[in-house]
Length: 341
Image (tube, rainbow, N blue to C red; front, side):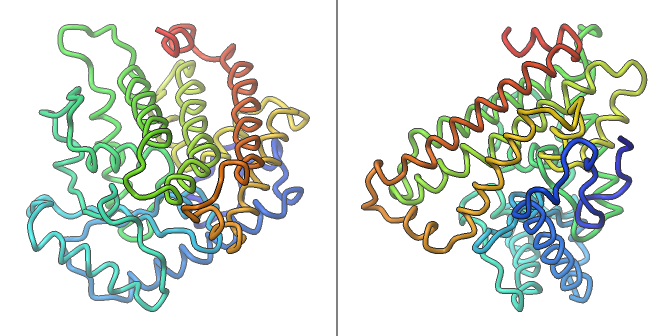
């Protein structure tokens, strides 16, 4: 299948030979709904008199993955020019101007205090002094990695496409004193770290109440696991590309997480890919139900009421594990081994 030349907001599903989206109406509807919302966001931002120091705005989360349903947050990555520091009042004012421009759309904001709540800059994203630092500023680390996981531009597309190669180079620079380190090593290590940190938070962080924690666990077991598997699969596929693997990697970042899995699928008859799509469609159907969402957010809900979606998460993880295990045979041996050691 040829790789698309556009981000998902401006095209149709690109992996139809491996997965026919028309057979999964819920996935198809979420794609079209996301496209509509992304176009509205882009139109509003283009029409607004935004602060000129805003270089680009990218949609991440459910919008970036093309799976927006009722009540989905608008997770936006705001990138400012390097002339402004991200912790200054001017930076927050510039970020606030984005939301003011989108006021008419009445989009749910991302969580206050989360990685999307403050802006960033190219200098922060590509700061060589924090490369390899385990205690790096979490919002910066999170936004940088979301550029690879599921983001796509809604404002300042040219600036976004100029920024992305810089961030890729930041991650794939040769290790000092060891020119033999594979280009994908740092990316893979941080992908594993990022996903496992979300696993830990989903298990233990009760700081926002039981209902919030339950909703996060529900999303983690489905969309965030697919997001992780999609980028893992993308890296694995590129690890075996003999010429210009970074060019291939950057081109594949235009694919959504589910597309990344489908694009690597060897056959339209792959049972695990079909199972992944079916379970994922049921997940979006649940998430689109206001009654279900409200029930899930109820702090008094017992775990017995959550049993069905817990099983759904297990089934999805098992299907993804089988799928990735099969694909692993096609990846570079060193990459496949690095998943364990």
